[in-house]
Image (tube, rainbow, N blue to C red; front, side, top):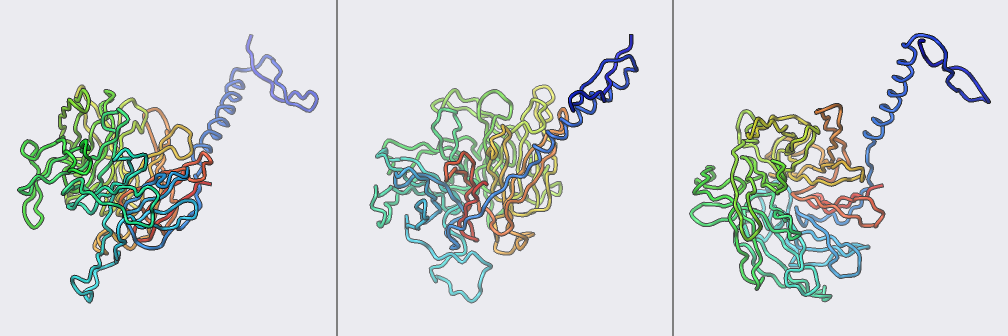
Length: 447
């Protein structure tokens, strides 16, 4: 007997299927229709855009880096941006150190030398930590690369006073310094390049001594004497990958459960037993050359790891800090060897000098927020005067082992500086975004 569904038998105003003898083709059409409806509904929900309201905290250029923390212990999350912090919820500005005069614009040949002003703010990354263990959050500020890193002691309620300054790192490098949990022990550390003299830079993580007012210890991940890379800038500089320049991140590249270190020249495999017994193996993969086949010194910003295409291995996402370009690099593992193939996300945006990852809509899929570092080189980079965008990238699975990386612009007159931070300011369960740059300091509150 051949079975099918008769679709148009009405009972009490409802459509109910009635079994009758016919061809099998009708059943196939019916099931295909249901599948199509489910697929369309799923696709609609996946491509729904996440919306934000922009709140301008301060239009003054104070920093390229930004972070958050409960500075005054009132239960509300404050904003820290270079020389200053903003007290929630009214965002009154307090100085941590004297607020500098930063032009943040194209060089002015009429400005006299030694006038006390600078074109760049003295902050490309900020972090908070109770360094002296007194119960108040202190602030770590990474000045411009090739400069020092300081920490500032929280004045414990006396916020009309400037904070006590301590030198933590004499000369760091890499414009994407990070404070990350490399050893998965819940104790994040500073990851950056470190100058060791003779124009040499290691890639290191830094541990804080028992007396935090002393210089912090550089623990070497990569050394220029064994990993010999060089660049000609006024004079020849020798560096381990990640030790200077741009491009840095962490993630489990080989899926062994440990956090590896990402650089534009390759990745350091984490073979460490723990932070007291560290070992690293470098795998040379020139991601910068893959992204730019002409090899003209492409510079990355923050780099992240994820299995974007759902094929079981981890891929990498990165962007150009000073030209156009946003890419992901597909993992092409052959046996034990891991190689990568460049996949273009967008070539519409330039100077994407920071990328941060979070699950914005709490659906289990990470989004990647990025944006232009407005006037990163004071008018000298391609696209410097394009719209000062901030946007997010969302991976959309379109089949087995396939993904479409969708970009969604959040705002076109804000930019993102060298650091992006996330916080739920109004405690509504939705993730908000914070940026600070030459356009000022802003919050994007998720609707």
